[in-house]
Length: 161
Image (cartoon, rainbow, N blue to C red):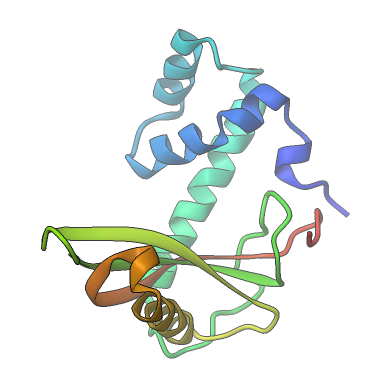
């Protein structure tokens, strides 16, 4: 069994994982991401960073696949990337909630996570997230909510917590 990604890299690279994902999402090259981390003094071993960047690109590419597939169709579990860390259930769906701020009436978007032990269609996960946001107006402070699944991960070797 392969070790989970984040347990195979240094603590410094684990700390930089969010920054790496953000850089990949913005289309930065690996050298740009590593250079920025070196400037801030947060770079670890280059091989660890490159491994993390490859994984972040895999997540981004699968997210684009999920957004392009029919939302009422079940994804193939063999294609879903493994989580680099422990997750609560077998599958984790990242859902983007878009709407209007209840106070200022400006457009706003937030990301929430929906988890499930069974594979569900992205449309169902988005519906659950939107219903939860509608029922908890104090927490989300959004109106006219639309939801869409932006990514899916499944439990990896690190398991559940």
